[in-house]
Length: 169
Length: 370
Image (cartoon, rainbow over all chains, first blue to last red; front, side):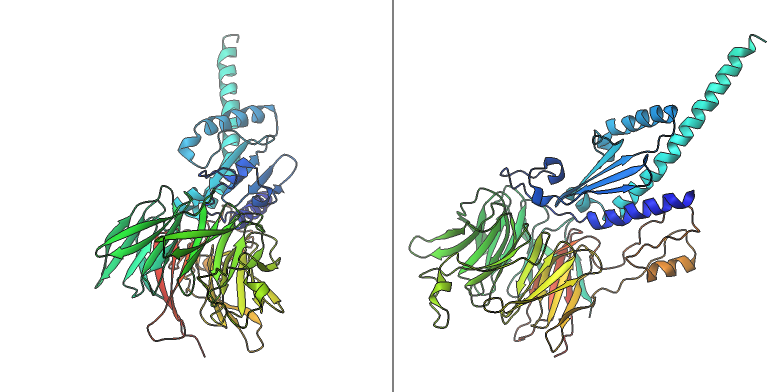
């Protein structure tokens, strides 16, 4: 059980190491502009083939890279309805505060739960291996967080129900 | 055999160039200025700040004989700076570009310079004595995407370019009045803008094109972690492509006809040598990397990390995610620029400097076997 997540994360880490080779590249379409090419999507020659890494049907990671930016989208494991709601709310909470994270994208890509956008400017300011560590750590922590949240929701529900039903004893 | 000097100048350096006597270095600290530092004994002092550009300065070249600096920027402009007294005086060069300029290089005779741009064209600029300004001639056709690097052939006429369409092209830049007609060259080659060759070896973006000192070998790097060597481009080209073990290269330098240094995303210069038959191969990394142990691991695991540099094999015993290996080399971030440092009187090159996104300029020295 623990092994499959190791493989999944190692695969993502290796792919990111290869894909995160970004450089400053001024826009070819508009003069004086410098925009992340993976978001613009205007020049197919500047965008590489996207890589999809699937752990199973529920969990996958899409890595789209271009000459000056990389977009990493993740679909988090959601076993039941409760996890669905928790994941959605938690990730929405994070995405709304995307400025604090710098590399987070405000809206996830269609079909995924959360997306990161890393540009060459991030690679210049921060160490590449630290960025990759952050992304992989994030993926690991998300699963733990959602399990913890689910556990606390269930515990609280049980406590509230016990207290409420005491009056009928 | 390693880094001779490491200087931290800024947070991030885009490109750099050395003065003819190697006492001054000009670089762009990832903004629209060019800083010139001079070495006084042991300390570097900021001598000049050239701030004429509006956007990031992406190319600087310092001509060795005429002591002129040429800078190009993403704002589509280029300036030629000449030192008058203690000040640097800029001369605007009208490049007639409608997109950013990406790279610049003085020709070997320093009467022309070439600029590659995002407008899918190259500008060849030369000085017109009568009007006292720099004129540019554009090569507009052929390129399908941005021109990332340009390299002059030692004969001052042929120019090799690499582009993000993956191709390396060689053009003739003969300009009447500036270039003297060579008797050996055939007249068909001499037309300005004539494409001599197009090399399709790389399937991804191509960077870092260079000619060997004799002009017989052309080398360039592809973003798919390959380096291509082409012998005898004009008449009978024969190519060799070497895949690299790790990340792609950004720039190359020929130290001699048989030794090439490549720098790139590995943060470590790589040496390639050709044997007597002309077969190129990867020799070694220049920087001695210390395999630093990760924080909470035992010594056995850290040994394994050291051995498995570049390949993260899955170790089933540990439960938490392994952090990335810490670097121990001179550069901490991608190396973007490599510049030769010729020693006075020497014909072979054994010193060069690299600058990278970590803001360091590192000088390397290498003993090349004859």
